[in-house]
Amino acid sequence: MRQLLMGLVNTFPYREDIAMESGSGATVIGSIVVYLCDTLGGVDVIAGGVAGMVDPKWTDAEKREWVYVTVATAVEKKDMYRVDVLMHEYGIKYRRRNNGRKG
Image 1 (cartoon, rainbow, N blue to C red):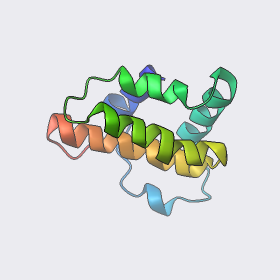
Image 2 (cartoon, one colour):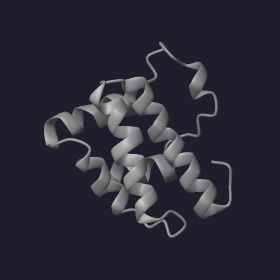
Image 3 (cartoon, one colour):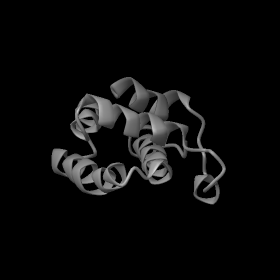
Image 4 (cartoon, rainbow, N blue to C red):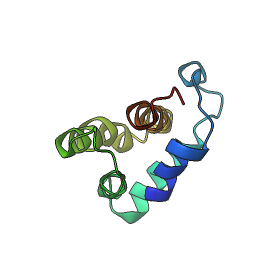
């Protein structure tokens, strides 16, 4: 999971128009995350990945709330599109907080 998150914040392309892509099959990241949660024990997989990211501008409490409230709801519903959006938003916000750039 940490490697996936590192890809989102460093390598994968910035997708500003992701909200307009519903139904277009643009849920690759969401599908991977839901699958990992299903096979490896739930959203604790995401929490472990997020905890491993160096992000001094995001508190542990904020990380837990994002994982266990926001992302967990989408994962439980198997809403791959929503999970995809949330993961890409994480990458965008991480870059803005830590690199001072748009993405």
